[in-house]
Length: 215
Length: 311
Image 1 (cartoon, rainbow over the protein chains, first blue to last red):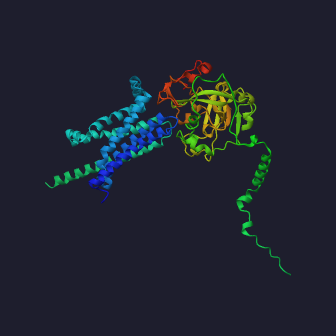
Image 2: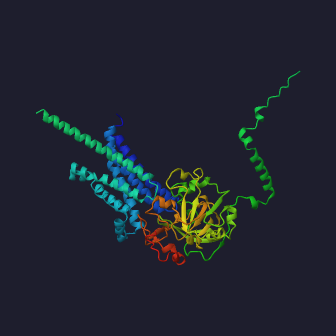
Image 3: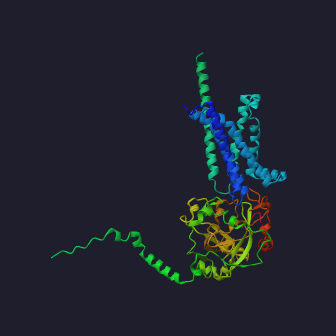
């Protein structure tokens, strides 16, 4: 199947393509910024947009494993690290807007927000949890941690995504269309993981049972 | 005897049905057009200018928010929940003819035609701060007169303790009403003394012109010491009542949007702080003022009231 595996050259090109695609939201903001296209409240626009793309890229990153199981596509796994790092990149921009423009390094104000504002109470740790994932994303780190421990650590991405969706849900004034869409998508992505985990567990037990019976 | 055979009418001479059905309107338009041709242009030219005398008692020492921002960044869920939705979707709102029905606990209930309403008192220009519950703000030069002028005319009875404002409910003109994001029609309300307060402005225009549709055309109220959603837009009904009305936002979030909703930096929204606000056009947030800076004028309305409980 042509789609299941790509040769190295095609993969290298698709990597470049995805890299550029992931920069499009930032490019749009930059163009809008220079052409007076950010509207009356540019700060809100940038904060909302970078938050939206953090979540979107997290969803795409989390779609790669289920896609492999469902469709047998192997090559997207090779793009996963880059997509995850882009989610972190937009998360950094999003958090910077809050830190610099909204609070201007008012640490006391930030601490109060974290305690008092539920959407920040979940949003802030969700962002902080992305830090260890970004730091351990290099090949050297994977080697140092060992594949198993690295995979366990990177399951934190599920928590980040859940926290991010809850953060969005809690800050919206009334129109929940977008948060509900993200929540539904994430439920499917995490639900598929549970389903496959259960299926694999049953299979293993089945094997173990038949193995025991043959003795 | 030869039988008379009418000559068939060529298809090209048959009046199409839509035109035939519209023949009265055609005559009216033709008559109107010929009359209009006789009048000086100033009478019939599509004119959205609205003149108002500046009232120096009502101004603020801050810079005006640019016209473009005032008319492109709006919360008006009847046209969608995005800030730029109202400017995009309000084109289909028909603001003439327009009537406002005033009813309930009044001695003289009345249906006002918009033009009659606008002539009830002298139009003033007043510069007010506008503070949204979402923690952003603007400074807007509104055109109108105190709602009190209208209230005096209809003579509230002794039972009139509250005033309810009802906005237009017509999904064909207001596409946002096709979803039930709020309970339609949009309802807002004030206590009678709040409605009678000279600051409460029955508003027909801004920046020297009639209200653009996205800003609540053709008539709205502006209550500058309360969060923006208290200032009902595109009003078709004003009802005087003994009981406190239930507003659309109270139904949407009883724990988040109270009946009073006075701007108050010390009483936070259930989910976010109200201590600061972003003035549109400014980079950093500025401190929110008690009653949006109208403390001197309105604090007396609330003496002895627990403003935390009556948020």
